[in-house]
Amino acid sequence: MDFTDKRVLVTGSSRGIGFEIAKMFLDAGARVAIHGSTEQSAGAAMERLGDYDHKVAAPGDIGTVAGCESAVETAIEAFGGLDILVNCAGVGEGRPIADCDEAMWDAHCDVNLKGLFFCCRAALPELKKSNGNIVNIASDAGLMGVPGITVYCGTKGGVVNMSRAMALEIAPDVRVNCVCPGYVDTDMIRISAKKKPDPEAYWQKMIDYAPLKRIASTDEIAHGVLYLASAHARFITGTSLAIDGGSTAGK
Ligand SMILES: NC(=O)c1ccc[n+]([C@@H]2O[C@H](COP(=O)([O-])OP(=O)(O)OC[C@H]3O[C@@H](n4cnc5c(N)ncnc54)[C@H](OP(=O)(O)O)[C@@H]3O)[C@@H](O)[C@H]2O)c1
Image (cartoon, rainbow, N blue to C red; front, side, top):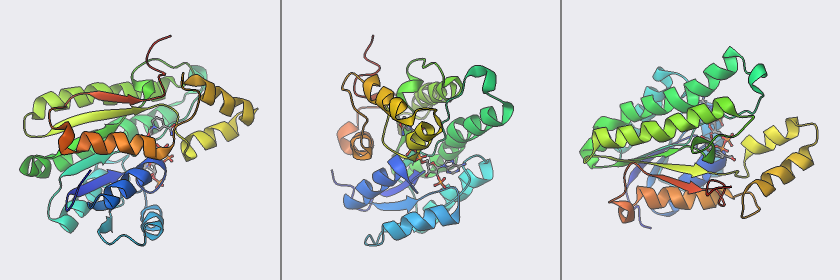
């Protein structure tokens, strides 16, 4: 896929899935704004991407409206506009309902839902000018209920349905789609596993979760994102692409 000179902001590209998406866009010729919650995390990712020329750091706390607007404005100023916004920044922690407190609720809702919405709002005027598109990273846990991650499920279900509503409201100018990954090998699940009494057993449980019996690699998710962001997907809006090894196909 060719993204030569396309102007892209990938939130949450300091690490994990977002980093892979940003790298894949750079490989495809795009100019990419690299985002993390802090200057340090975005700067570290910029260093890791040292060989690529067309990149700029655009940090900001996605848990605040000001942080969202700052990141989006930095990208727009650097590139003179925006063609593609990928909302990948996210948090996820599994806890039984009884242990879910207000701080955990707020952290999930602020980053996964509120931040994603306000990044879209900030980017929309420029995306309308460029007939651009948005790809939101939700989760297979946004398409079905998963016990033990109720709060995360709530936010990711919200992302899926908010993306549909947004797609309808801003068509035909801007397309909006979701990618819904299953378990992907990143810090998010490695840190979760480490906190469990038996990390190895938990890791095996994640492998067994998908009918395809493995955990995804970050590039498998990034390929889906680039497809939806590309001209090949120009008649696709309001959809959710599950890249989950079959976990949402049924029981
Ligand atoms: N890994 C999985 O199994 C999986 C499965 C389904 C969906 N997802 C979703 O995929 C997305 C990426 O996940 P990942 O596994 O790559 O996670 P990760 O490795 O933990 O990386 C999280 C990214 O989000 C950023 N972020 C977190 N809180 C932020 C905040 N308040 N402000 C700005 N940026 C913030 C982090 O920035 P810093 O580096 O600055 O902290 C980092 O770039 C998330 O939306 C996640 O819910 C992941």
